[in-house]
Length: 216
Image (cartoon, rainbow, N blue to C red; front, side, top):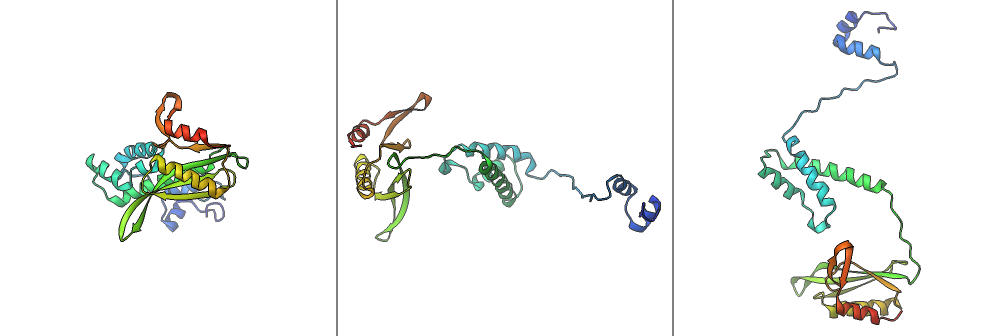
């Protein structure tokens, strides 16, 4: 209207009901540009507690999943500090942060692990629940997986004792048709007595003797 029809700013203001400052701002922009309205950020009830939530979320990233705090636990923690807002605002904030953190993690570089056939296997335990005889019962599942082919064997036991550990290895190797050159273990109690300085490990004697006796 200013350039095409040669109207004054006052006339444009009268016709459009826009403020003079808005019209002047438009005139300073390139003709192809489209101005966007930006709402000024207003502090809400959660703003004061966002740094505390961020600190907790970043700390939980370095913890095992079972030890990470849930949204409800974080909500209860900031309520004790004086937060008076709703629960959904907290969950929305946590969800946005976790989604952005996941996106960054996916873009991060990583070193692929490659194994030769028969080179190594991985072993670990997990806790599962089954309905046995009408009762909900916890079981310990031994996971034995070949690193190269990703073939795996699962064995379920009532406990995680050495006898169960050795039996799981024997069953898995018999099923897989052989024994790889080396095993990769987490810090499970049946294999590691203590994690020492420098990420060293004090291997359990019974487990060490059993592992050393395995044929290559």
